[in-house]
Amino acid sequence: MTIFYILLAIFLFGVLIFVHEFGHFICAKLSGVQVNEFSLFMGPAIFQRKKGETTYSLRCIPIGGYCAMEGEDEASDNPRAFGNAKLWKKLLILVAGSGMNFIAGFLITVLVVTASAGNVPTTQLSGFQEGSSLASETGLQVGDRFYSIDGERIYIFGDIPMFLDRNESNVYDIVVLRDGQKVSLHDVEMKRQNYEGEMLYGFSCAREEKDIGSVLSNSWNSCRNFTRLVRLGLQDLFTGAVGMDEMSGPVGIVSAVTEGGAQAESTGDGVLYVLYLFAFIAINLAVMNLLPIPALDGGRVVALLITAVAEKILRRKVNPKYEMYLHGAGMVLLLAFMAFITFKDIFKLFGG
Image (cartoon, rainbow, N blue to C red; front, side, top):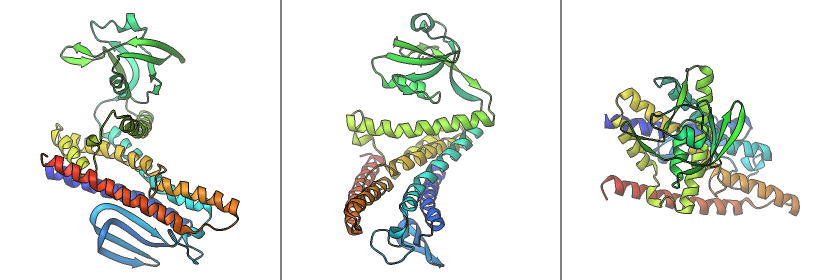
């Protein structure tokens, strides 16, 4: 079954890349911007076909892809060039890729929640483990709905143990919703203990019947949580809570997907695990691509806005070659970083 999960992971990577580039492509077409080439993957072309003004390509290196628009990185006299489009159209085209990734992540999450066995877990406290003193010592009550832990909003059940585990002091500031009102509980002491062979915090949460409303709500909140996890990951990286050795690229992700899928109790559970992971990756791609880093969509958005302001002040066009140099340098650094992460993952994969 290992080869099945490897192929599934590669296929899903291709889908996410296609969806992202298709977002740029369809928005460019609808905005009247000329698209010269729409390519899935990078490197030499395996297949190419020109239809109208656009060449459609499939390339041999299964990483990335692109939507090459006329006048994207250079001046062009073509009235349908990207650089000659209205500012709002250019901004929409740039954010459309991330928008499509977010939509894809949400739809995958809806599929996973719908297909998963059992009812949907909630953030509402339903009881305490036998022997737990949380009710008397912390002020928590059955029926409370967790609203935040240490200032971080609680969107889904999985947020609760995640934020409890992140605080090593085991002392928390918790806000719950009780009878429709926010109730603040300060300096709440709580830690994992052994309850019938499981290390738990001493409470359980309710589940709600699976219907359209609960599925959509849980899926939306899961995507909100995925978005926050990107921020937490970057925060942990910059503060040193995690190191570069814990970062993974496509090779590491495929390896983790394969291992997780193979350990599932059934093929169906394995597929749902892989799909849920790729829903997170889709949201991750959406957010990361909008970061203000040269060569990424977010960097291009910031450059566009700065250029627009500069042209208003200077009352003349800014030469697009400067922006091209900036994004070119960013792309070189980005590719070097990707190469480093890929070689690290390969080295780890073979037991280095």
